[in-house]
Image (cartoon, rainbow, N blue to C red; front, side):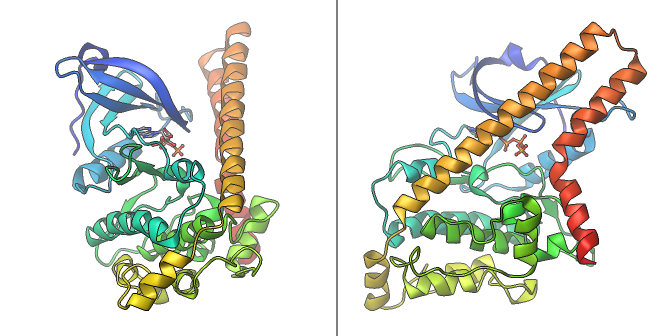
Length: 361
Ligand code: ATP
């Protein structure tokens, strides 16, 4: 079992600015007092008791920590330390100075497929390593693909957030309905047994977006998106893919395959001619093709807007909750009720998935 230090994290680290927020807390930059080295600290609120529904279950954090400890690869975020203090667990992890990959790309004027492939190759190397350890991420999406620094060529892709990850044990059948609608595989929606192929579907979606600035299955609502995924409703619209090579489309088509065992594995992707060209003609085709930057910038701006909106809504919910608890001097039982209200809105995606499941079965 993972060992959590009981010292106060602030005795050893100076806490700095907020880098981002997740469902269960903030990620902040920290400076190790002894060495002066900068890290990121992920603060996770833990459920106070069996009756409480606010915060993360300690068991889930332990699982995330154990998976991170099992993964040591230059394309996977490294875990340094774990602290536990009252109702909070703090993970000290490698600091990603380069921010999110998609933000980095959106700053550029243009990007050839060859340049985009350099990033994709590193993501695939990280994924291939995870899969070689029988670990599947299950939440690969632009927000979870970061860069170690913001200067080329000294930057490495780092995969973050192993909150949904799972390590497969031989002979085990694992099902889950978690994930982000745009990126989840049909077998997740249909509540079928899962495998590492789930990540490969997400890689297909990420590549599609990277090249065209369009999300292949995006509907007007989450339910419509899930229906599009299960129905395999996507296309390479000529007007958005005019700058895309045929090899790139072939690569995506071999990932967006409904049957998980027919999808390319990460290792097979690394050997696909689009990623690893065998001839000079193939190299030239990649250099001549480019990503649809106008669409991509638009996609990224919308994505960031949605993230900020979600963050503001979460803060508002929390403020309302605190205010309510203060003014009405709630007893423990009532407080628990507040917590379940909060939880209800946080798990909207899973309830949508559940609804999708019941309508598809
Ligand atoms: P979610 O609710 O999506 O599961 P989470 O609570 O697991 O989120 P993360 O996704 O790990 O939290 O982090 C939230 C955000 O904080 C990220 O999107 C990113 O912007 C920022 N972040 C996370 N880890 C780092 C890091 N190591 N260095 C810099 N920023 C980071």
